[in-house]
Length: 414
Ligand SMILES: Nc1nc2c(ncn2[C@@H]2O[C@H](COP(=O)(O)OP(=O)(O)O)[C@@H](O)[C@H]2O)c(=O)[nH]1
Ligand SMILES: [Mg+2]
Image (cartoon, rainbow, N blue to C red; front, side, top):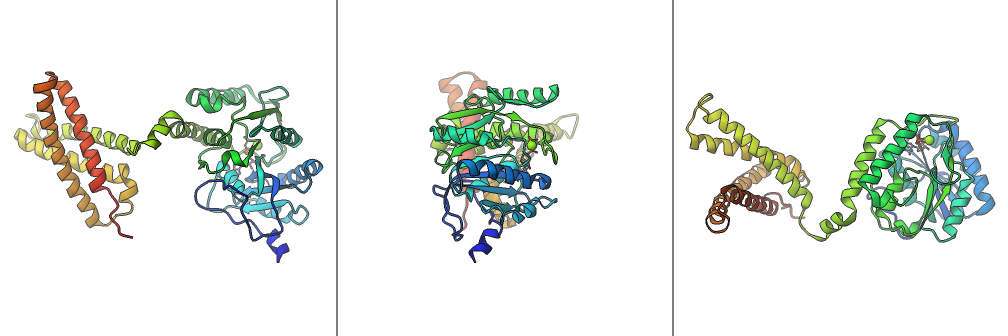
């Protein structure tokens, strides 16, 4: 029974990408806890995987024999990398293999691997031999010296890249500079934030919800984890012998997306957002939708009332234009601003109910708008435009808050 279990593929964890406190208790008793869990993410590495497993095992056997595990996380490679890896588990009992069929992507592969890991130190190394295995020992030494994070860097003594073109070097450094501008608190802490070769203490990332976007898992670890001391070791990024790189332009776009996401969800601004109960993101979307409504209102007013178009009476035109703008805003808010709620209440009668409520609240907002405008203009600031701005702001907050509480709220009874 136990032999069979050790040779079966690992179950892919689901749910949030969080690392649990202790190595998971598992029914599989053939593997006990270890010091190091090294994840090897793979996609189409059939021709590399055997060499990688052999060399990594030889290297680690010398220093921490029996106290490590290798976890291959393969994204269902069409070249059946997972199957080749699985066939090696008998010869290498420290090897465990995960075949992911539903999720994709380098970062989430690494995190899923760490989620089933039983080590107190979690590491990652590429599965294409571009990361020299002997550096593992230096990384382990840094961790043993008390570092929370030890990373292999191309930009410290002993580091470099072998035969990269000028364009590639420029792109790599450009990406780093951009990162330093957007996220200096994270990228500024290490010399090679793009490194995909590192080890981190499990305790430094326990409980943090890591984000699956992007290729650069190290940014997540530094940005969201609790990493105090960092050690770096130089390494030369070798050329690939087998297979090919999966990096395309998509990864550059994802990288920028990743930086912005990290920027918005960490740091002072994010802490403020987390502390206050005000849903800032929703409010911004609501404001943008409102702005689109102003354009719709203006355009409709022109089409209906302008002497060169339909030339209808002004009041009638304004009522129609206003209602169309309200409809526009409702549709956008329903599909975008409050999508989390409306997705759960998609029936027509539920939509209609929301629309009626939205209409009534907006109407009340209009009355409030006129009221505030008059009060501010007559008693506080005798400037009609400033007074109007204040009135619009007050009415927007009213519209948002009351709609949040009344129109888009979950009314299902469990
Ligand atoms: N599981 C998984 N591994 C991936 C994915 N993309 C790349 N990899 C692996 O991640 C490592 C680095 O990828 P690679 O394409 O060599 O990137 P490069 O070295 O920067 O050119 C290799 O071991 C790849 O097989 C992916 O989407 N899923
Ligand atoms: Mg590579």
